[in-house]
Amino acid sequence: MTANDLDLIISSLILLVAGMGATFAFLILQVWCTNISSKITARYSYLLPDPEPKKAAPKAQAAKPAGDDGELVAVISAAVQRHMDK
Image (tube, rainbow, N blue to C red; front, side, top):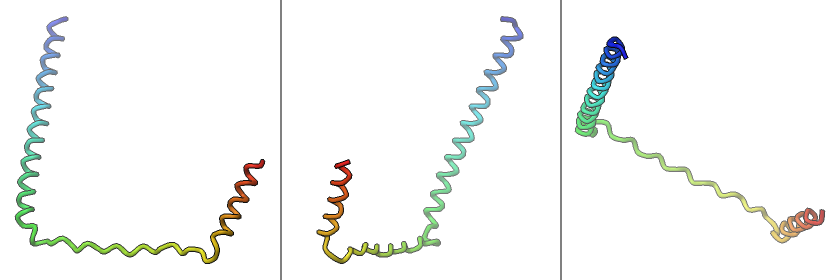
């Protein structure tokens, strides 16, 4: 390892620490600004009240077929039996 390589590694470590430090400082500043913003917003939230929630429309029930269910059961049973015989 030459002196030039060692200088290159040291300068890259300095750049790494500087970059990480700048990122950390920016994130701390962002959290601080967000906290202040939420406190200000909470203080003046009465000026813009929330809209009333819309009531959900009642769900329509499926119409039950008129007639005897016995016939439907017989048809389904016959179809299943025919399928099983194959």
